[in-house]
Image 1 (cartoon, rainbow, N blue to C red):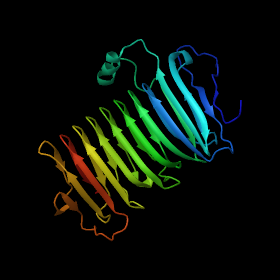
Image 2: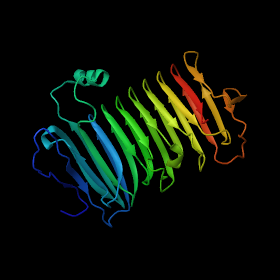
Image 3: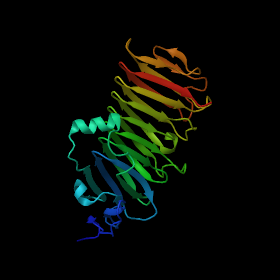
Image 4: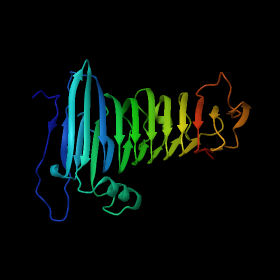
Length: 297
């Protein structure tokens, strides 16, 4: 098998009574046959962590589950100069969907931290990431990675996105897209993403978009809110901000004190002008939910 193909490593370690051991489950090696990675990762249940790696393998996945405890599907191919990886993980369980939802709401079995997948990505190549979560939790640390596009879709999972070492994205990102149904997403330090566009879609869940640090480039944020909540943290008042909102009588919109009305459903702060640099532009549509703007004090 060529080195670029997936090597499924089922490492049999000595068992320790009463304690699950972490095992390497999958790895994809870096080769000179491609110069970018398109990774689609679906985790229907469980807890998933994504981190930068010190190694140059483009994908390493570890878990404290045994192979018989979960099912997976995988495909890997090279298209042009891009390595396209699709990996779906699902923990096997005798519990039905109703029991899983009951666990998510009431926490009736197993602590969230007990069973997990840890996914490591190299800092050496640019990624287009498509991440899809069902139930459980996900923590995504993008510090120092090169992400060209990022798409996150969560059903009832709770997702946290951050840049732990405050190291910005190595390349300019085209689109940072987040969709939440009944779960929650907290996307922090979004100035470090260096994304031209941020797309936010909130159904019945909750989303936090943190722009509280001074941006190094302009960001255009487009958001839709159904019956959920969208909280936006703004940077200091020296950063130009303009907000356009399409709302209804069923919704609630709380603007920060520095945002003043300058037109129909249009608001801006004192630093805003059409020729200003690094503008934060918000185009938002809300039906029955709530949008809250908070300022960086």
